[in-house]
Image 1 (cartoon, rainbow, N blue to C red):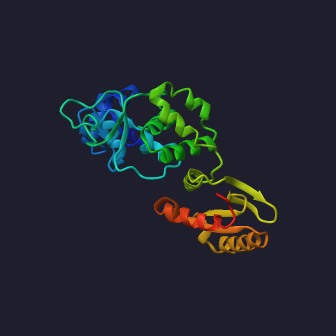
Image 2: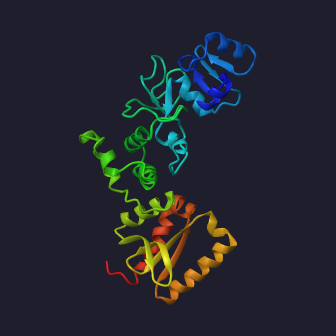
Image 3: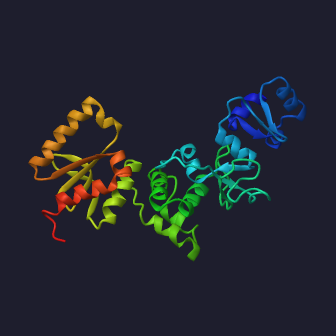
Length: 285
């Protein structure tokens, strides 16, 4: 593998020390920079043209992406794109930088300092374990639960594995988030909906197989079906299937409500109000 190919393999940006450990020479690196194959960002850091800004920020900070910033590279769900980068750095911010700024780059980045498991990939992305533990300590409970549920469904972690790595009172809130995860969701938005319904004290069953209807996303209080529609539900074959399922549900005595991503994430109170409007007529509270 030549130098440019290797640099692309590690994320298109790297410290020269990384390239030297891989067997390349200082002479070869200088020649590649002189030839314009890649550019020197500062002493000790080089990058290919068009290198990802988040990877560049991580390497300049001598760190890796973690927490919610690492989720796409780990192949797990995240609910929102973060406003600031989340970086795992071995050392705290350098003197003179504002609090929360990574040393050398990414002003305003959120810095995570503790690493339990070395990264598994060549790109500047923290390990899955570190990514999840940082999210559990850092992100709002629903956001962190979405990430953990995704990894759990893929069989890449377990709740017990994470729980024992969150010891002591200071990690109590992080451990409590694990109680929100049950591995039944088919998507990030279903995690949000499940937690929304249960937070209202509504008896919520997930992925229920109903005779003559099939699997439904949620069955609330035993009679209200709630389906969460993704983009595929706008396709003509799925629309016909959904219509048939709705009719079958009504004929079987169930009420049905359907919601999309923006309903659940950006207008949850409307969802709750409409659910209760249906439930109040048949549930004694």
